[in-house]
Image 1 (spheres, helix red, strand yellow):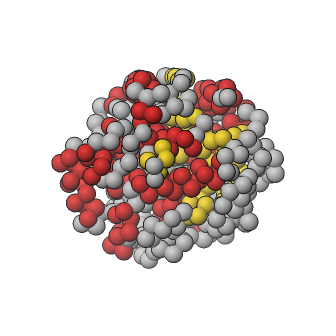
Image 2 (spheres, rainbow, N blue to C red; image 1 turned 60 degrees about the vertical axis):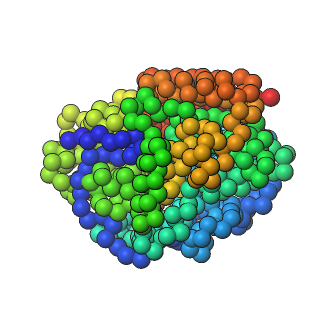
Image 3 (cartoon, rainbow, N blue to C red; image 1 turned 90 degrees about the vertical axis):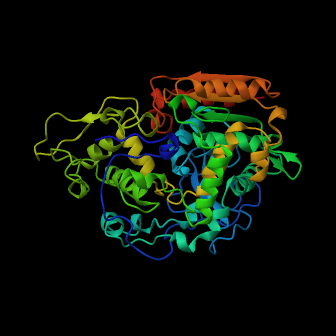
Amino acid sequence: MTQRWARRAVLGGLAGGLVVAGVGAGGGSAWAAGGREAGGGVTGGPGAGEGRSRAGGRGTGAGREVHVAVAVGRGGGPVGSDRVQVLQVGPRDAATVVVLVPGMFGAANDFRLMARDLVAAVPGVQVWAPDRREENLTDRSGFTGGADPLAYYLDGHYRTQDPAASGFAAGWGLGLALDDLRAVVLAARNGGRRRVVLGGHSWGATTALAYAAWDFGGCPGYRDLAGLAVLDGGVLGAFKGAGAPVQDSPEQVRQRLAAIEGGRVFDLTLSGVGLGARAESTQIWYQLAGWYAHHDPEGRSVLQDRLPDALRPSHPVTNAALLGALVDAGFGWPNDISVHSGRIADSPGADGVRGWVDEGITPIARVAEAYAGPVPAVWEWYWPARLSVDLDVSDAYADTDLARSLDLRLRHAAGLDVPLYAFQTSAYRGTVLDAARRVAAESRVPYTVHETDEGMNHLDPLFAATTHNTATRTLAEFVRGLR
């Protein structure tokens, strides 16, 4: 029932062994989906660019949550794609902003629950979680306006991004991603009036460390920062414990670049799961499962009958139970795509349907809440294949010949001089902290904080209950202790 995939296939996202046809049959372009608009471009200042907050924004103080748009440089994509959306949680007058970068196939809502917990735990802190620019290619309109999401997506009515018409994405590598991220960081800094802690989860942690070592026109990235926070990811072999080495030999890189040049501009790794051949197919299935689990958790699963016989639960289950079956470690999913949540009930209710029983540190309702929104952006549909190449090569964390050939400006790792927090789960068998120690030893990092929770799987830090989330608690302590 369960397949095993290379670490890069699933890092930062959820994937299962489902083999379901019929996703992604729609045509056309999806660069501008309904409900994606937010405020104007951020030019600096607390709350800048909020002009029109995205649907679902709430609050004015510590509970404030809005999405705003940050204008970024030209990337050659469709009109409207030269911007990134940023989820902002917490008071607009905060003195410290924690910017958290999602991992592979991840999006801003990965951090919504963690952001709420951090803001509640640390006075004077705001959390920003940016989507990457490729999120502008996603059609999420099926989750808004009273539409039936299942029919919209599984029956192929949504707008897709045709790879053949997406040659621009061949250039959407780490350099562009870091230029975009710097626009976010500089907006958060507000002309130096606020300090910024930059962090990320999984490959988002790799991105954060790359930012710190990057040369931005002669300015090292770490000079923008007051601290770094890496959550179950990094560089220098951080993921080695999973037994899947990075693909960064010159020959591997040459072959991967040739594939991109040949038109494979989006990373199709998740298509191997069997949920459809398109880049977005797997993401759609999991997003649907989370959406229904949030909006009707105890209702009979609307997706169950669409599953193949081999994977369909033998008894009718609720929407919440179906989501649990897709994300819980107890069903055999690999560590880096699973959480510790619970199990399907042993006995059905009066309606003959079996629900979900929470027994772990991550209640299934929290996973569903993150998935559902208010903006349903936990999954990134169109991950650029070039970004995968560049992040693999960045694992060396040095200005190598190979890095230079790809214009990866990793020139300042040795000068890194800000505090470093590193957290690891059970996913990589200790190599995350080993790698963080190497980063510190080979730089000028003044001090490091290393934390471990072997009771967590890779995705638990994003969704675990507040009282059980070691990552959120220790990260809050780190941020509170910065001077």
